[in-house]
Length: 130
Image (tube, rainbow, N blue to C red):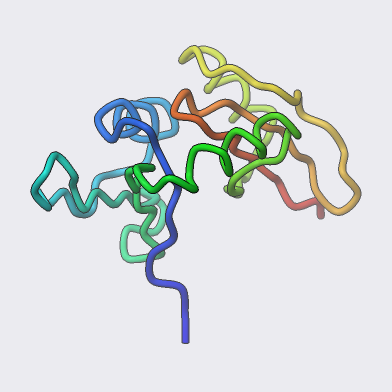
């Protein structure tokens, strides 16, 4: 068994697409109209286009808003992405206007930072230490 799709809840799929594609660099894998304004909108890493898909899932369920607000209030990232070079990645993202809530730091076995995805989530990026 392997992970096929994982989700991140977003308050606006179009805004999320702009952020995850244009700022973070993911590529659209599927963009299918599901009716009612919702889309099956998945992205993949350009480094692994056949790998795990990230679903930009509408956060319309009543439990989504308080869940995400509680995570953000406590500074807890919703999910985590891996990078090869933390310093270069953070610099690139900052140049694109990405805001960080936690600057890069040593976290034991990884370097980590946390960014605001502008869609209601904190996202962690990590670099494995050698």
